Image (cartoon, rainbow, N blue to C red; front, side, top):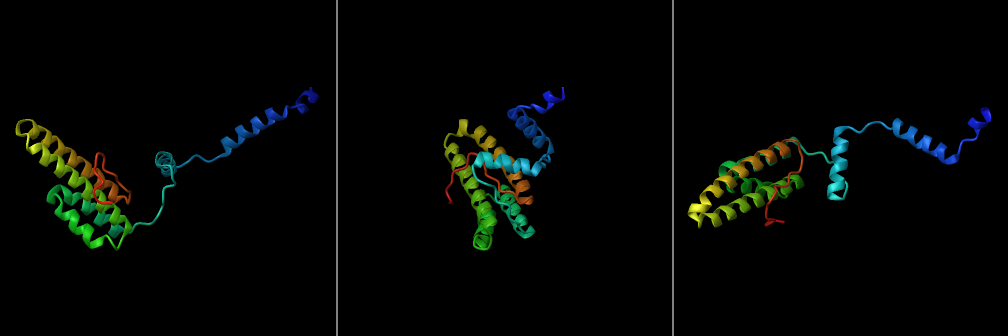
Length: 154
């Protein structure tokens, strides 16, 4: 019987070692899992840079002011800070692109008064929801991409 235990097939031994090494690996944290998922979607590693609290707050304002000032608030914040901070430049452009998209859609639909008004209300509601989501992401220092947004500013 001891001979049988010593005669282990090398492939079986590798499988046992592989299984053991999988168990020994530490579980990934939720941030690492999100980063890994983002890398799979985007196809490149996610950059982990420190973003100052001031940058986060200005990006948050850039997204939030779009609800109340349409394009003026985000435009002023972006113009004043685009050369100072890469994060603010990206988030400012994203905010302005989305707001310009909303303006173009609402302007086009306003021509069709009867059909366009209910759709305009839905677009404005979606504008508010997406801006709140962007505000929350900016407060955490995360990049936010608005869905269905024309890329006017690049």
